[in-house]
Structures are given as C-alpha cells and as structure tokens.
Image (cartoon, rainbow, N blue to C red; front, side, top):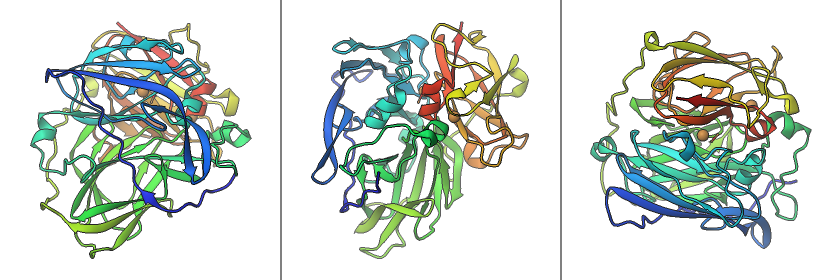
Length: 443
Ligand code: C2O
Ligand code: CU
Ligand code: CU
C-alpha cells in the first residue's frame, strides 16, 4: 500500500437530502445503499459503496418535534442495516444488527425527534460486516435543529459558513483500490490508513470568508483517534459535542476526536490576509486547506453562553453497572463475553437512571495498550469522571461515544427513556466486528 499524493481538489459538500413531504411537522426521506466505483486517485478506480451516490451519503436535516420516516433501500449484494448513531429512538427503529435489510429489500423506520439540536450520523451495522461497509463508504450526517439552535447567533449557512467535515483515513493499493485486508496490526488496533479523506476527497481545499466559520467535525474513521489543529496554531472554540451544544464555548487550539465522535467548532479566520491559506493537521500532518478569499458578509462574536445542560444527579442512579474491556485482537471482549445476537447482556427498567463504569483493561498494564471508544445506542449520557477526576470542559455536555484510554476507568450517567434492544460496543469497527459488543434491553 502507499500514501496517495494527488492534486488538490475542492472540498465536496454532501448535499442536504430532500424532504419529500410538504407538511412541516413530518419529514419523509429516501436513501438507497448501493455499490459504486470512484476515483480517489485520478485515473484509478476503486469499488465503493454509497447512499444515493458513489461514496458517503447525503445530509439528513430534521427538527426537534418532527415525525420522520426514512425509506432505506438495499441495492447492495449483501445484507446491511442503517443505524442512527446518537439518535434517541426505540430499539426497533435504531437499526442495529437485528434490523437486517436483505438485498433488494427496504426498511422504513418512523420516529419522532425528541432530543436537542446536534450533529449525529448514520452508518450500517450488520453483524461482523460493519467495518467493511463503513470503510467502503456507507456513512452520512444526521443533523437536528431546534429553538436553541435557531436563536443562536452563529454561522448557519450550510456549505458556506456551516460546513461538515467527515474525516476518514484509508489505505490504498498501488492500483488505487481500497485495501481492506486485515493484517495482524489491523486485527489488534483496527484499520488505520495512511491517506486522509475529507468528505471523500484527498487533499481538498475550501475557500472561506475572512470571518467566523462553523465546522461540524465527524471522525468517520474505522479506528483512528485524531488530534486536530490548524497550521498557524490559531485558537478555536468547541461549541458542541456529540449530543449537542455545550453549556458554553471551550477555547482550544487542538482537539482530540475518537472514532464516531463529533464536535462543532467555531474558527475565526478574520485575521487572515486575503488569499492566505491555513492547513488543518492531524498529528502534525496537513490534510486539508482553507484559503481566505471573500470578505465575511456578517460579523460574529463567540457567544458567552450556548445552552443549559441539566446535570443528571448521581444520587438519582438506581444502579451502577460495570463494563470491563478486555483482550486483544481476535479475543477482544466486554466482561469476558464476545457478542452473541441471541443473548441479552444487561436488562434495564424504563426511565431508570444508571451509572455505567467502563474500564479499559485490555492492555493488561502494558505501555501500549489500545484505546477503546465506548458507545451505547439509543441514549445520550454525561461523563461523571475519568479515573475519579471531573471531565475536561469540552466533555461536560451530552455524548454517546467516549474514549477510554488504556488502564482508565470512565464513569458515565444516563436516563434510559427508550425501550427495546440496543447495542453497546467499542467503536473501533474491527473490534466491534470481532465481538467487542453487547446488548442491553430497556423495559
Ligand atoms: Cu456508530 Cu453501534 O454505532
Ligand atoms: Cu450508535
Ligand atoms: Cu476497541
């Protein structure tokens, strides 16, 4: 395999999916999962998968309170599912491995949006095949807006100053095809590529106004943790974590984003000279550039307050459950068990508040143990502490995925308001596919 060096190209902006229902309180969407081919390297084609297109999928944008239905057609040759990552819906709408869609069939879940404005995403979740299907291109953004996001004075013009960046890394064969043959290192750590893609493009550029930009970041990789910063080291503000807006903006000049994690950031490019370029870097390597071209049509300031997050009181928790991440490579497991479709691992009561304590013991105290991003379906949680210490400011909001470092213990708290069967798992997709996943049943 080789790092792909290619000409820079404009950043593709995933289109907003058209709502097929004129009623403002109801939305009807249509997605088709399909096989395709695409040239990431000019003149060299690879097989891909996409929703309604050749790679990734359109952006579904809905409002809190809306009734949504999505018809998902499977035009692939394999079984697939579609999971709404971060969405609080009942288990039969969630799109986990139990909701398989056979080739040629479709599935039309209907649900009501009952959670605050957030940047969520969707991706397939078939048993043992999630890694391959996501790698081939099946993923898209799912945005929720509400009264709070309506009122907030931040950039909102989609594709202009409110721009999604789906960041992924891939490994290519020398003929320009995707490489998804898992070697020993991939089985241990998940597939970590050497070529970065943003919205499906290698080495893209984006022309920004000389002013405030809102970037919606999604780490859409199979297994890599990103450490992102700008080449001029400029500061920016995180305004949202995976489940929605933070209480207030958090100033930073570097952001860590694990697989499946999202963050919204505000970056002020008004100090750039006209025509000046700034690079976005991961671990010090540049992978996309922003060039300041036009004047900003409007001036923004960083809001002092964003939203009110009602802290869940740990005294309200009726139970503490422990989840111990253990084993390496093909042996990865949670609490000594590997995934079994026919086994419910945890039974919860509807509307209960619980503390979940997640420990990463898979490195067995070794220096180079693996980080595991813990994710639970159908619920947003709050982080109580990491090894007994309060979480950093940018982790004080709602989250559905949290990095658990080697030998670390993270406690999260949640109220389970939706019934059905849900997954919890490591979001390194090769770990998930190897069995680092369990099921909980609510109600
Ligand atoms: Cu991103 Cu089980 O999901
Ligand atoms: Cu999920
Ligand atoms: Cu893992």
